[in-house]
Length: 110
Image (tube, rainbow, N blue to C red; front, side, top):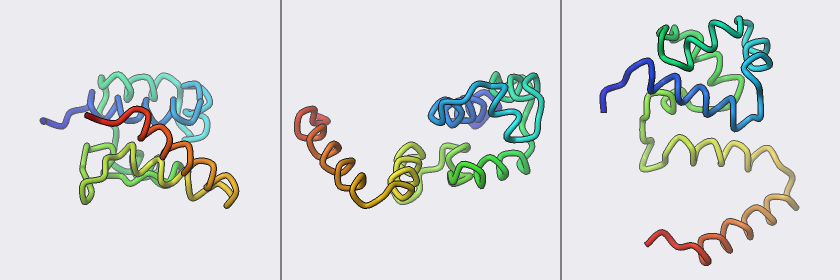
């Protein structure tokens, strides 16, 4: 797969949506204008690596996620789930684990 601004923009949009943020809120958090963010998300303007690094740090996402890199067989989405899992308390971790186990048993990936 060729990496391009559209692919990276889709990944940025995904991070924003996963965090339930509007473009305006995300842009404010990342110290950019909403218009600039929109251009990054649509792939009309290439995003500088420093901006990707800042997003990566702010949202605890490996920068490789934006490039579609598969780290030891783990997708970017899986890495995001791990980061969220680490942010919750022990009781909720058990609940999240049980939920994922139940879902995997009910809806196997055949």
